[in-house]
Image (cartoon, rainbow, N blue to C red):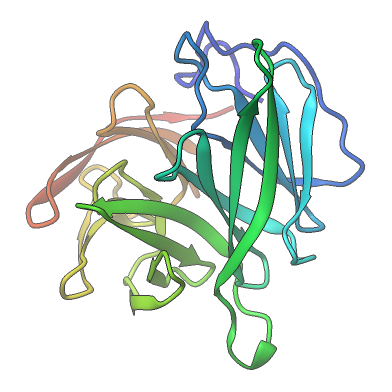
Length: 261
């Protein structure tokens, strides 16, 4: 639930309906398809049984899709593919598996469109078939025509994957990443901020000025001002943070801190 007085509230995205699932929802993600007004058309929800539900803003469920894994979906990512009206969907699961799928629209000749989804391939599986750590974060990063998929598991390890399923590299930051800045390899961590150099797979980290050795538990970047983020600390504070610069020179600063009742 998001309060109207929250910085995440938007007058153009308000509660209009409810969707009742027969299982527990584990994550939610907005797909990149847009209507003629530029608004998001579909929302995807992952559940505890490894299924994806895709529904309209009015609550109509268009797709119920099984991802070939019955492990709960803990993270989701999507981006438009090279084909018209098609998107790639990546799901990260509690057992550490990452799967790729595709979803596409077919116009019915009127304002309505049919939506279809199918399995692609397994990008990363755990070794020896054993369960791995939950995938907490999935992010796509573009370098020219190349796309890299970044994942962060429960230990904080960052893995960089190619679209064909190979592991490009992995690294272990000193502090667990919590949120990545859009289109840049800068991220906020439990104790500060960090950056990732893809060429060397080296991480650079620094403390966040004003955090005063508190640990952040959750961050989300502002949708309209990408350098601004909001988070909660282990001490129950709501913090407003700025992350500025590039991967070589960046600075994290707490702008405000407020104790939550």
